[in-house]
Figure 1 (cartoon, rainbow, N blue to C red):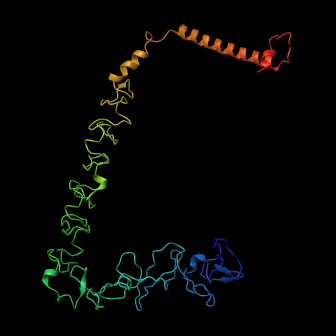
Figure 2 (cartoon, rainbow, N blue to C red; figure 1 turned 45 degrees about the horizontal axis):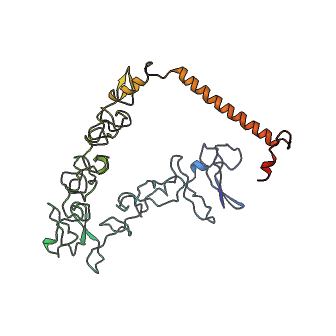
Figure 3 (cartoon, rainbow, N blue to C red; figure 1 turned 90 degrees about the vertical axis):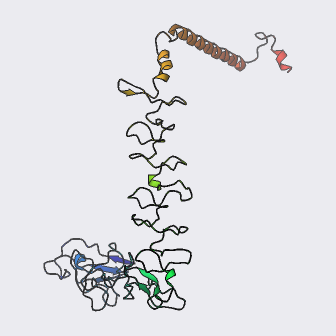
Length: 361
């Protein structure tokens, strides 16, 4: 198991100091079982690129404190190129050779070296001609996009196989469609062209009707669906667009201003904050002295009557009922206690002359 030094800022006065002038920190080291291999520099000046143990493991070239590697290991991997950069990985990641923009694969997030100068792509992303038996690279169109054929086979196909998009010279993927992959609607089953005014990759039929939204409609199978999920009413089975500032359409949003909850009934109020809690009531809650109730004024009348002093029950009547119930419970407990005492006493024929008749049972 390999263990590395803690790279602390502890200064040392011995001979194992960093060789950078003015730096008095200890040398960095890597420990392999019982062997320590020291670097010529401290952690802040030691290059992150390591080698074999027989070669000293550490890079002999120092680095700046703000960099992870020395200038030699930050140089472009293309022979003769003097560009300097650094692979944008996380600290502690394995070293990967860096390539500049002229010699790196043009595929997004690919750090590999470009293999073909025409396409500027690595071997993994290299695109060959789609003609059977042809290994030539695909032809690059004037707009920078790659065609489906190489330069040799580019003009050998009929013009009816070309994309009909104005100014496009690429080939369409099949004989049933009219547009190439860059100008065809992104949905597989749609052969229409992309919306020329939109920023997305969809046709006008499958793109959200909001002008600045490039997302597809919520359900392409429904003819009346014209908005994406983010702009469609959140009510189940509703495909109407949302109202501005709400998650629901005008029919399903709460009528109260600035409320984002769903209405209990169509064009009504929400049950969470603004609708009357009485069953099947469409009214809003009433507010008395600034306090919002959970019911409307119409359904608060019976509650107000029950709270009046005239309709309240007689307190003395409830007191007599409570005392009578308490006496019944006390008498029942006393009777059960007396029966338990009689069962625990020994048999006395003089006290209980008729006791023997229970023994026959």
